[in-house]
Length: 415
Image 1: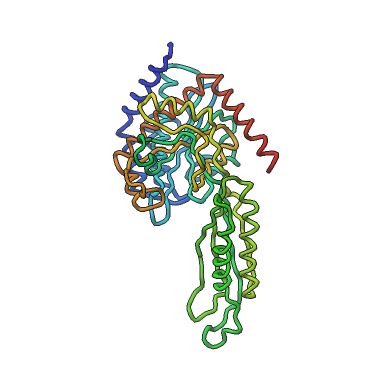
Image 2: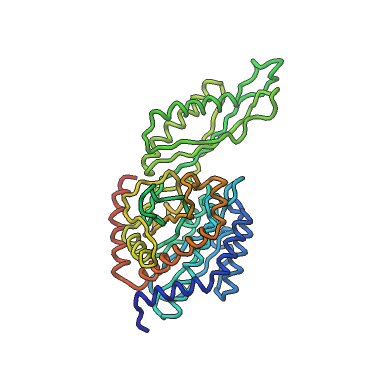
């Protein structure tokens, strides 16, 4: 069967329209049942149940992760993966819109699989359930387990707030979105208990060590480059007001535009912890969470431009250039883009209020709207068309890999 671009577009649109009820239902189920890192049991089961009802062979609990799954369709040829995220944020639910991410990836997978089946072309598409993006490093563990071996491209999309500047042409999304690298550290301070009223001089105050460290880092910020971010919370500050705390802990995230930039930043932050401990007579232990280090997102411009072209054909305007400044947020999809060519477009949930952005209760509410779902499904059409392009066009795939190796070699030499 001869496959024209218009036939492909029509098939993709028909597929997503056909599954719209199921997609809306799964999106609502995930949003109404927010689950945290590695505990996304309902989301895992609901998605797997849906795919099995649609007669796909699903591997549950894939790659040794209880809430990961994998489903693949097609034979031979190249392999394209869609990542599905579905974890939530503590206290805020789906304030990062992962219900929309999962839904758009499921929709793109179904449309691509049905294109392979209907038009009978060679190639494979995989939907990979990737738990624990919000601090758990799910994709880092999946990389270590070999989930991305033999993959030719990896695609997913993420919701965000208003993108268009005031007075400018409305923009539906960003194709070559970039993000910052992130490193995570947990610091534990050890001191000496004492009665805070009777004999405080016998104590070594581990809470004071944390407070001193926090202040030290706050003072450090004015000497950091504009691209750097350092932010944290106290996890444990003591037991009772009348007991000098002997054990306290905090957790910090360090961000910069590159993994290299974080190395120097890590040394400065650790020095702040050590100074807080020394000044209070305490000890400090720093646990750098290497399995949860997120690399910067490196969008493959070849694939991003292909996605932009398809979205325009579907009537949606996406900013294309890789010169977009990296967002301050981070994602473990960045680590995936160091393994295979990939993109992580951002699509607007449709709000006109520029203050409604991820990681707020207002964004959690926006992620449940019909408009947000429509935008996610529109984006999935472009993802599916791009995936089919990679499977069908050797020149596109070769160009994407050429760009990947051109970018990765200088970085590997520096790291």
